[in-house]
Image 1 (cartoon, rainbow over the protein chains, first blue to last red):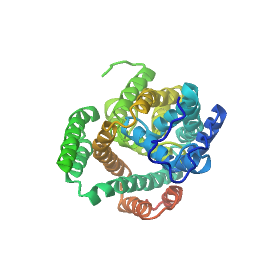
Image 2 (cartoon, chains in turn cyan, purple; image 1 turned 180 degrees about the vertical axis):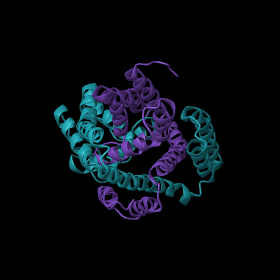
Image 3 (tube, each protein chain N blue to C red; image 1 turned 90 degrees about the vertical axis):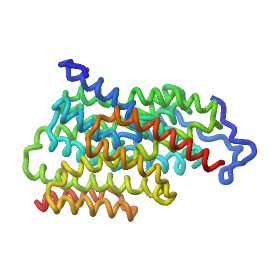
Image 4 (cartoon, one colour; image 1 turned 30 degrees about the vertical axis):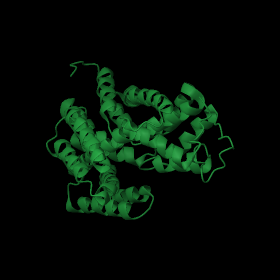
Length: 203
Length: 177
């Protein structure tokens, strides 16, 4: 892969553009993603950004945003996509695997151990009560993320976006239509609206 | 739908397909996971699903771990592994190829358009996840209050989410919920 030359016209303001980025090895990739993943309660993104941009300086903030945006618009677990794209950018397919294994492997062992405990002791009343309490709080965290992500739309008064948002919410959450059908209708619709809105802004 | 009786094959098929439709990450696929696991395949009850979600939030790591746990409860360790790989594999491969393709056309305008169009969809899906999980978890007024409290705290402060999960667990243990 080319040691990507950032757009010539705009020199990066913070980092000296001449210094080559650090090139992590396979083991380093695995360990770094394992560390981010194990630190990440309720989402790994914050830690991934801290690790990749601030600690290891493997990417600039802009590069990280671009990479994450890509992984956000692709389907599937975002942070998993990020690990694969990131690892493969430095070390090819093996790098993608190393980062992915680091991200998913260790927490998978922990989660499976917890699940095994649950399977054995799940009927104990105290554990059931505790888990019920945790679930309530966990749902609250999810709802908070939803509102945080909605704020830019509300600030922009993006009426079309909010209508799509509410329609998808109603179709999936209230009517319980299958995901595939809703998306097959909603994605082309949303794309068309976005393209129309951009044309209008330009005109 | 496959009428296959092999649980591993069912897991791989269900999550492999789901991963390609999971716009906006694992959390926005929760309604579909709930539909598949509780309503279509009868892998678990509503209550078990809520518990599995709680466990996945309790353990560190990416949100996709809920899939690992569903797989585990269906078919043990093999199921956990199969479901996780099925959920991550196809999109990881897609991400790999798309990112290489974009490297070559990095100044194109369409990625930004696609992304802008998908944002409201993925937020709507996550909102639906919130509703479905709240319906299964919040069986009492106090439970609903804990959810609202955690949501408000997480929205307004930068407190580590772990503390809110812990507080919820303590309140639950104390028998308040």
